[in-house]
Image: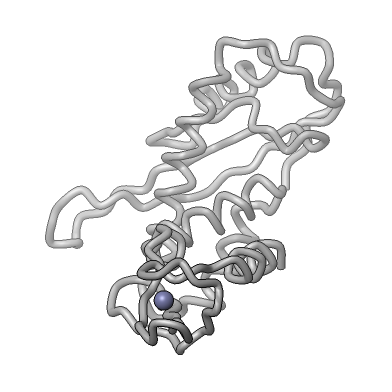
Length: 194
Ligand SMILES: [Zn+2]
């Protein structure tokens, strides 16, 4: 994995935070309750221990998951596949619905940046949709079904259009398709669905 290599590289160059010595070894991992484990180090020269707060090991769990799911999404994994993935890894808790919220939120944010631009695209756009049960009251009993629909350029994996809708009507779907068509002009020739 790439990120692992980066970490390995990083810790080859660790120097002691007290005496700046490079004579440093890994001295186990400190477990944290809500965050990832933190690598600890020991200095062989001054004999002190320290951990490095670089924001990476301490990155909150959910931030890492957001990154993971956005990666899956932008690598072209469909919502359905992501859902299967999430169910396999988090069968007992609500993480998968949370992940949907993140994807919807971040994807819309990114999409809003691009809505008014003409985008260089390939010839094929792929439409994908996911059900999203929005909690409408705090006691979790009231939920309404919403939809998140997006269109992705299969060549660049860039989302050219997306929409968040309360009902999955033809009108709403067409709006998303039209926006995608507008953003890509005559470049896109084919629209496929998962
Ligand atoms: Zn030292």
